[in-house]
Length: 340
Ligand code: ADP
Ligand code: MG
Ligand code: MG
Image (cartoon, rainbow, N blue to C red; front, top):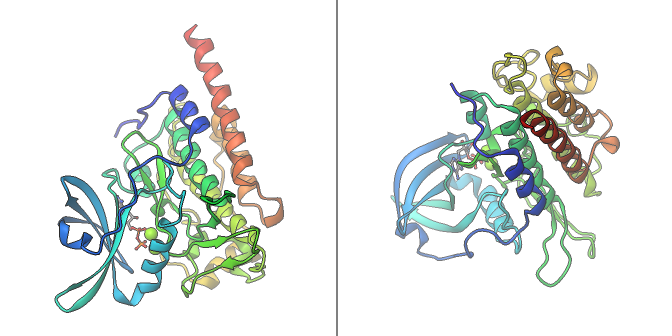
């Protein structure tokens, strides 16, 4: 097991200050896309389908194949990725979607960039992080979330989008250690001018372990779009906690654990989660060692402000980003003072 840092802190900060949309390849939607792809091996298997690694025009791609009973998720992901200006270095890159027939069975394909490091969940299980790689994970993920949450006005604009299923398994890690947000099957969109919230028609509501108190006790006001942003921020707080545990300080690292592993069973029920999160108002423990490490201490403050019981006082994605940039800048000063 080795530390995961690949980029320098300066590069990471530079990236996160200048990142924007427009990166990636042009959008390609072809009816025949599926016919041009050679599927190589399964890289992910879930309740809702399979993810394959394949070859398309000499390029390694990821192909997510949905069961036809989950057509709603496929349609939603296709719609979200087809949104103009969704292209962003911290959002999974999309090639196209296809509906195809295999062995007289309808198959729904979603073709995206392939990230051989897999999900952030895999990454955190396999590697520990230094300050630099932790900041890279945190800053790149919040950059992706900030881009999603922000409505861009204009003829080529984008609606505000809330993800509604943020978790370490839905975030992928690029080779340079930066993250991209994936799995848009539950996303909701909002445009200020019409005030309309396009909630889609997917009956699934996210991953129970990561559900916020207001989703669990059903007090969430779904007529206000901001409510969905707050749900994402709550889950981001849990993801940041998962990542911080894997960051070394004074020679100590915590083993990987999913949030609430200590208080709910393996596949928690809605009621298990409701008892812990709403009634007991329990949150994952912040280890003592974090308080004596400037980066981890800064992170714990952000984490607490993200997973707050009261959704209205949770940080916005922009606030989180600014706080993370501040931590990175302070860390850089420490590093340079030391090098000097
Ligand atoms: P689901 O909607 O079934 O949860 P996801 O889109 O979250 O499907 O993909 C399931 C898993 O497959 C992810 O957690 C990740 O481990 C892997 N995976 C998905 N897309 C990619 C990709 N583009 N590159 C590498 N691994 C991927
Ligand atoms: Mg997923
Ligand atoms: Mg999904």
